[in-house]
Length: 361
Image (cartoon, rainbow, N blue to C red; front, side, top):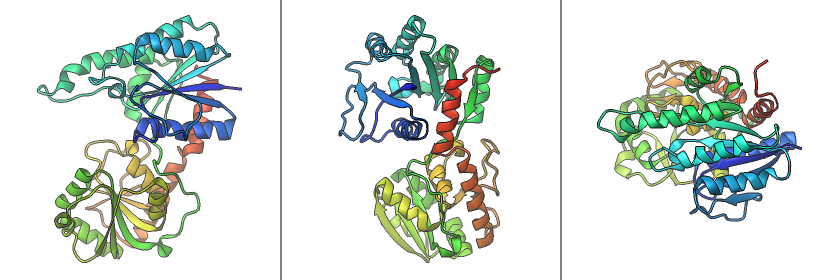
């Protein structure tokens, strides 16, 4: 029986994207493939609510403490360590040398060939203008990422751009790309758009939603008219009513933060969702993934580069596209099909294969 130890900075009940992703993946690996999955939390401040079994936490984020935990975990037999990596998740400046030193010591001292290190690169390294700290830290962050990639027995990521960079370092190992999972679950049986509420949903951080409403008043109003939208569902921390009034002519329901179950139920009955992902890739957006997995037509403020299997006008619509109800329905189905290729079940199958056959033939 395969034993996997996932390393994460934090787990639920704390809000943490890496922890949520690890739990979704671990649950599927156990349910679909019978793997035994444990978790090692590196943040000493994290506290459990008892909902997750098989969790241990470091008392201090040091290389020696990490080696001790990994050595103890491997004492029972073959072990796969699966690290979820973002530099800033393990060090305030994005340079977790302690983590790499600990992994290197354990990996080189592993007594069994079945003891492997697999790394999921959620991010690679920061970048920014010369007046930002990211600019000056980037070279060392890049060095650590390169070191980690060369150390790993197998690796995967959520971006084709990241995968190409990693492949140049390790062309001999399997290097897979799976865009991010929905952070509120998945739907398989979808209600057709004709049977859904004529509603647009916007959710996320308050600052992001406020920017959406301020910057896109006219376009959002036109979108609602084109799709016959009768209600806007605003989900998340409080946004001032004056900002929301910019979307004229429709009813507005302010929900505040919702549980995953309630957010999923809301999306299941909505027609469209709006997202502004800035300059980030859509395939790395949990909000975009949630829209796709629930059969909601994703609408963005702009066109993004065609990457990660996503094509503008096919898998999402831009505010400046020609939009009608038939097009919105077609796009929703295409987006849902795209998501199915890396759903929780598909991801677990891919990771299981990656673990079993890390080296390319």
